[in-house]
Length: 330
Image: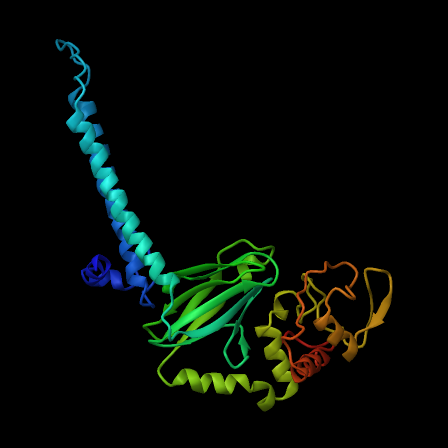
């Protein structure tokens, strides 16, 4: 009840983007902002009070000619109880506000729409109930959405500032958090846990759809491999499945071999053996990335076994075929 009262009395200008905070785009945003601004203004108040009194006392009780130093005042129990009790009470208030907000954000409503989230170097994968995986987080407006978050490699952290939402993606475990978006639009999504050389590029968008638009988007997006030419579908998979994070299409160096001009060429592996980049090699590399690692690169690619359908693998192969030596970056 206390949090609800504080939220309703939050000034209107704080319900929009401010110097400290981005716009409030979820139902929890106002609650988080109340806690933040309560601590912020409390800190400002005590800073001004303490520094102001300190400055005044330095001036008032400075050493002056004709004035003798006064004896130190005797112990005051009332004063000590006061300056101990007031901060203790404020700490309890802050704890209550913060803990209630934390619990509210951790326990999703029973009717929440579930999206599985997978973090991997250096991309996000959002899997919807029908099995479709997208590189951006899509959600319907005014609907509780539960995120079940894990990682395929190292620790990542899903962070959507406009939702005031942040949760770690930890290998071998599942963390859960939920939100209800209240404004349609696109909002930046980041990884907030350093996870390697391309950590700063591990970004995406949280896209909130108007009522009815989310279902139409999901149906269309889920069938893009069936409706698009295979090379175009492969290019889309190259982007949303994280291939672009390590494999360039312009010949530049990355954490993995460039796709430009690689098709049909002979490559040397770390064990000294050789092979030709063809359909079977690409498929094997997607299913078992550590089987044949190209010399000069580390075995950091995650497996896509069970994550890509045969037609999706074919689409990626067809996209790589289009990247001849004179192909510009797609």
